[in-house]
Length: 124
Image (cartoon, rainbow, N blue to C red; front, side, top):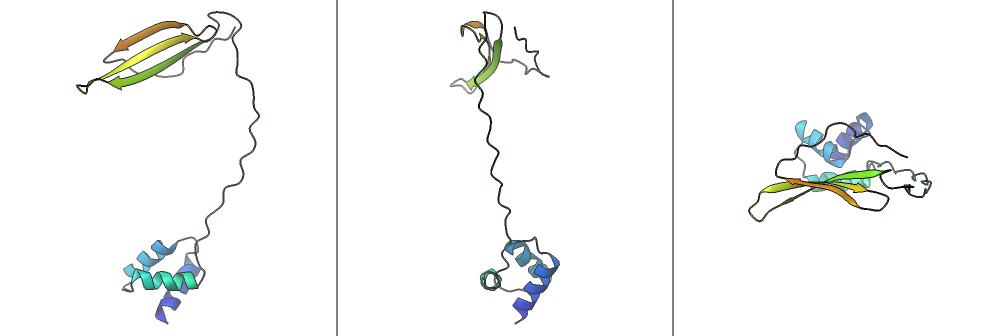
């Protein structure tokens, strides 16, 4: 059967391609076989492209979160954004003290530029 021969040649030459790539390559060569017929034969030949299974991820070592020992030792910063009912967007810049979770500053504006680079992190 010409379909089997064409598929065998194609799979031998390109073992990593799957069914649809095989079908499209056969179409480009001028074979106008229906994709359902080609798939039926492709499946019967057991040439399905084997996907690589992911290896089990290594177990992550659980560590307790860092707890600051005094006020003004560690701060967290965060950008939040939202939009008004009119569709206009605004951004909020928050600075938070991690020891007592006090809000140190909150800046709201329609055009707050994003920071570039990494902010320096100070630990007591």
